[in-house]
Length: 180
Image (tube, rainbow, N blue to C red; front, side, top):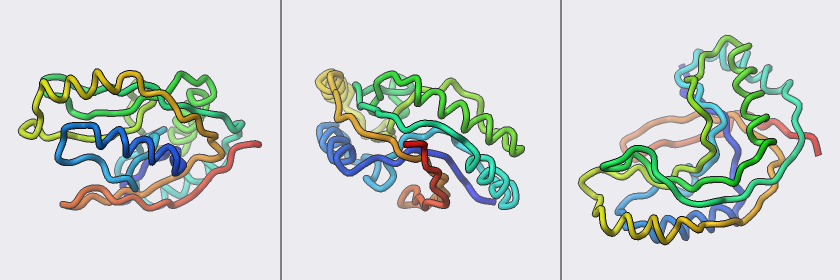
């Protein structure tokens, strides 16, 4: 079984901007730079033959290249938040690609969780004990205006995710180019 997901990798200038945002969060731990990405579909634990079927289905996806832009910071969960994330500006092309990825995964026999797609990049998953609510609220208010940089999306990728005591470790398994 392989724990897998499909995502868009982020270019260095976006990773630099997100690292700067993370440095403004009053948290002891944030997501490691090498784990920052935009998830299109979390596939969960997948048997290797099923993942090969999904790989073939993802290889057949046709979609154009498009641009994305960071936009705002938000949280999932409340009192305390489960995670803190950078948002992305609305993109019809992103939503269409995500829908194609989900349909391809289902056509390959996988059952990714059916959740409303909220494009985001997870910046931190704070432990309740490390949160200072007033300081975190102020930092989030200051970061609400996060804007840019814009970046081009040329492909999407299939990743393996291995969990350990030190956090998740991701390895790229395949890359799927978009039409230029």
